[in-house]
Length: 494
Ligand code: ADP
Image (cartoon, rainbow, N blue to C red; front, side, top):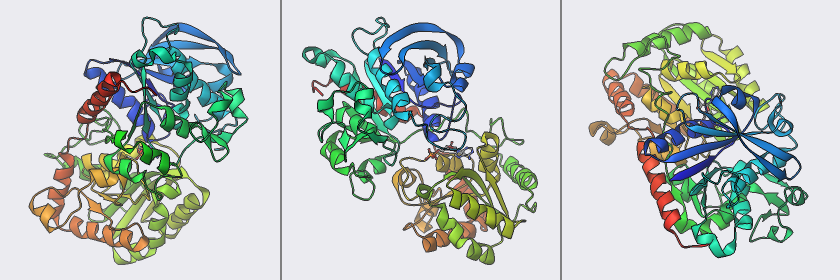
């Protein structure tokens, strides 16, 4: 199958979160299954710098606002998966991140930046694509940034021939981000005005990229089976639950896999002491080195709690701030936090570090190396998300022998098995699942985890169970491949 995988970030080219991890590793897994896959991504400076063997492939002309863009063909540095980067100095070549400037303010022209990403994907899959020897069977879109692709494909394709034309699949990695913009962008993006309606692109008077994708895509998936159900409810649907529920029989939840080339404690390039479940000594060494690096008291008996996260309301870390005093009063424990995001959360954690200088280390910012070292050096990973489409960090925690404390939602519910008498007995326990998402439950669940940590026999079982999980992409890639085949064979016209 020829698959065009459209994404706004991909590790190791550019990363702000889990979508980059997925876009870096999932296409490689699909290629292993003999699919002919290419990634399409905006040509941010880091992308143009890092792709290997790059050359000019073609030019697309007459694009709204920007005129021409160049398509550069190269390869992913680690996996060799072909990458097509959209080169447009005016859209993508600037300092700052993929979505926001250096001060964290969203780029004002994001609708055009990601509208063009979406349109280029549709143009490259159309009959008159300049790549007429490489028309994809499937255009796999990811999140709101690519949500207009299925809409453009719908408007562009000749209705009479639709059955044979490429099929679009939208994966929703997070319903909370929808890409909603004033209606004036419709004309700027060459979208037909009649599509601006309830059965189309309109969402409460605005143009919604995500809604466009959900409405026009031939297939829809989300990043975990539980999240696929949750987004059909008022609580998790962020206003789009009705539309999702209408297509409920078509939506599949497929749990993301882990890039085990990057996230494997026995080969991790950032660790001073590699380890695996048979030889765990390295883990203690990593803990001591981490404590020393962060200026915490070096002591392997003290339980070290780890957090690596965007600091946003979604991640529920305000609950950790609320129970921190009680946690430190009742337990001999330390906490390391790495993350950045909302001002109040950053400040809250910085104040906590000032209050407990020997016990709390807070690192505001983005740091790939430290994130691996925290995963390896901590004893327990904390992730009390209010919602979590899939979540990767809890899976990294499992593989690194750092059992996670998680809330019972989305991919967290699908990937962590709570510790209790039964799951210890049948050797399935891998972590600690909160019964509800509140401060008391978080405190109680961390306390439960610390109790287990203090029982070496039980702790060994839990760690080993997690480390032996098969969390790579092999199974999930087969699930997606099945979905692609069904879409290609489907006679349904969108
Ligand atoms: P989300 O995509 O919602 O942020 P995930 O758990 O799916 O959450 O993925 C987050 C990814 O981003 C992980 O690879 C995690 O290690 C990484 N990450 C998040 N914050 C930081 C940070 N401050 N420094 C380094 N890596 C981070």
